[in-house]
Image (tube, rainbow, N blue to C red; front, top):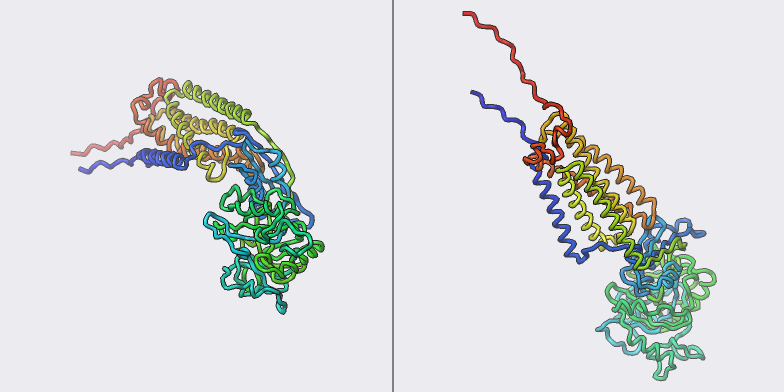
Length: 596
């Protein structure tokens, strides 16, 4: 007798729903564990909820520079504005680009918003100052004897000579960068720390005796008898520790161009130098253009500078004088908002054009070129909006948003319980899983990408409750339709899924597309709404596929749901089900009786 044929086994989704449930459970545990390990157990709150000031800046086109608004210049501007905000003593400020030409500056409560508003969008404090003294800064920094260690060297043009050049090339100098004129070639033997310039830069001799009137910017070690201004400068220089971020940002801030200052700089990441700098004689507005380029002879990255006609005269004056000095007083510092971004040395007088060469990478050369070319901020910005929210108002808005979310969730739960009864249990568990995933991801995105939960983002999360519930309803209604047609629960669950799946994917795709378009075409807080809406839409797909459907399959195997009781939400009588569909048995043709 032939063995009976085995029927076709259940599909993967029906037969092994536990795998999908285990996968999403592992994801939830991993996200929750990462939440506690990161130390950020709550989402970052935006300015409108935590209180503070939000400033929106829009980049403006500049005459003669039609392509100035680009990603490189926007990123440079963000870095400069961030340093300025940090210089105000602000902690946890957010500076980021939005769109192609907007920068959003969010400054938390406790900061002088007026002062911040004045500084974040201004085009700049960029000056060329002569170096009087330079010293490594840190707890274990050696005390200099006599003149401080030079931070750069320069090479003369071919055929020219520079006084004091032999002394500037001592064997004990570390390898560094040098600046040369556009007609000059960098000397391959230049081996000094920092950067050097060849072209045209000058500055009055800062040493005592260089002029009839002593200057307060004289080196702290120049003379035992000093005036009060110089004594104060000596004291500031001795106390300055550039490894301290607070001291580093405060040094040189709010100084007048005519003042001598102390400032910090860094030629090597992680190490810092402190400087005494003389009064500025060349400003960022004197630079007509600066750009990164590759030197054709050495193949190294350089920064070429071109000055205005007025700036060229100033530059020639300062380089003529600096080229006659001994290290470190043959250097000039490029000072941006009180911080030394480069300190090349000069060996020959330079004119309208100059080059800064040395151990540049492409990125560092481009960054310095942008700083020099645009006089600090690489772009001109227009203040579009300034929003100030008190901490009390932010707390009230957050409370109102949470109350609105709770009311919306309660209405959804009431509707599910009244209409779907037992199926509401599956929907509520799915909403809980979606809520856990949304919360943990939002909290982790705060330190990861700077995401801050603002009031529009809260609105997006509230709207997402309805989108998520809509997916459950689509699936439940497909299952109920199958039952109305006379099928039992387990086949109805599997037959309803393909049609419900298509509807859910189309609906979520439309929602995600709307969120993506809204995120791209808007700026500011509206992007928070779009981001949250897009995130929750993606999570809706994950929850429905990996949790709701597998859980529905498991519940369909229980007696409570499969029996179709009144409280299951799947009662065939209440749904108006037709008589059960039965397979028609195949009728065999009658056989003729055999003849005897």
